Length: 58
Image 1: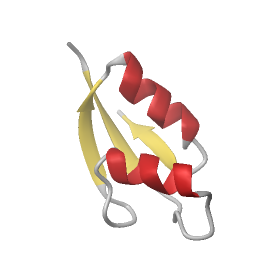
Image 2: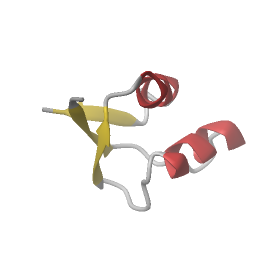
Image 3: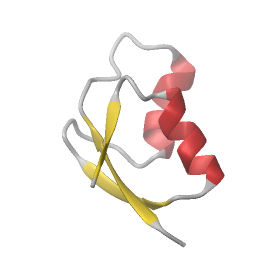
């Protein structure tokens, strides 16, 4: 299966608890960190939920 690289570009401070949990579940710990995940429907849904905080890096 294909993988995608996701970069956190905005902070999760002052965001709702569910968005903070999604950022943590994606594996982010620091701002500007890049994580590589399998492009499953579950991961793509999490990315869509916090799309204003992350960007997909090609």
